[in-house]
Length: 100
Image (tube, rainbow, N blue to C red):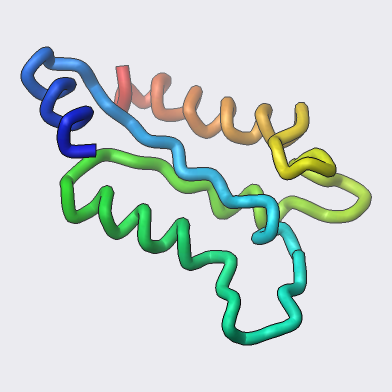
């Protein structure tokens, strides 16, 4: 991550990580309190913050995902609806000129 960050900085390239939930965060039950499906995302985001690397998270994906209106496919990848939600958030940042 440091190499990527520094490469982009020295070349004036705007870097932005998109941090998406993993499939298990969409309601999977682990059956034990020893497994925390949100831990990898929290650790990665903590590292990005420490290294001052811009990132976006998408908690609305978890909030809008339902059995009748899923945002992920059976294999855990985003479906058309999930991609549209992510694209809309990114589009908003372009319109506000937060990212160019």
